[in-house]
Length: 212
Image 1 (cartoon, rainbow, N blue to C red):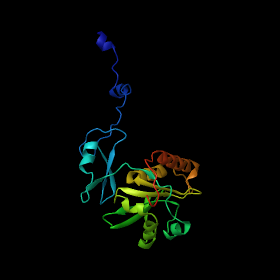
Image 2 (cartoon, one colour; image 1 turned 90 degrees about the vertical axis):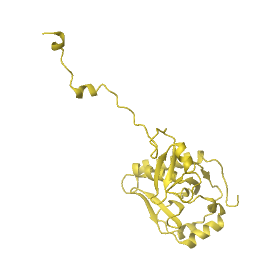
Image 3 (cartoon, helix red, strand yellow; image 1 turned 60 degrees about the vertical axis):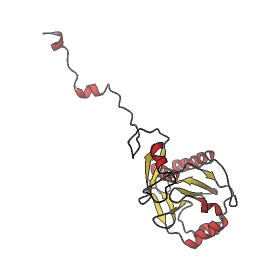
Image 4 (tube, rainbow, N blue to C red; image 1 turned 180 degrees about the horizontal axis):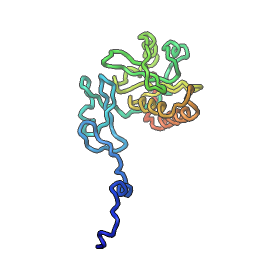
């Protein structure tokens, strides 16, 4: 018997155990070029779907008003002087004290969304209630439609108001979906939410009040 014949052959399945799986590389959803963990996003305006993008493709959609996609900006502002009374908040008729608001071009109105274990849910928002907020906070008129949102955190004693890119809102939605347990969410999810808002404040580039 030859040496070759005497050597047992490893099956293909065994050989696969010695091969490290190649790490998944994210790619631009428009041109398929590889992109890093920190990359740009576009929003598909009609569907509100976020699209991962390389910088080159993102630049193509910067400043577009009527296209299929709009580039999501990176600006984050902690609005420390934002004016919102408890009575005004109650008039928004939201079931929880965590929500985000943005102007939807297809809907031609401001949309209110609140996160939960099933994802983001849209809430009815009266035009009069939003007008009261814009009078007290003119900065709301500067937000870019579809891609910038007012993110409000009034959980427990918190009174936080942030101008954020829309992908940050959906990041929070995903975080809650991932960590929610039981009826109340559990301790872990609220720790993650608190950490999320701490990081958001650290990433804030400026702080402006209603008359800035």
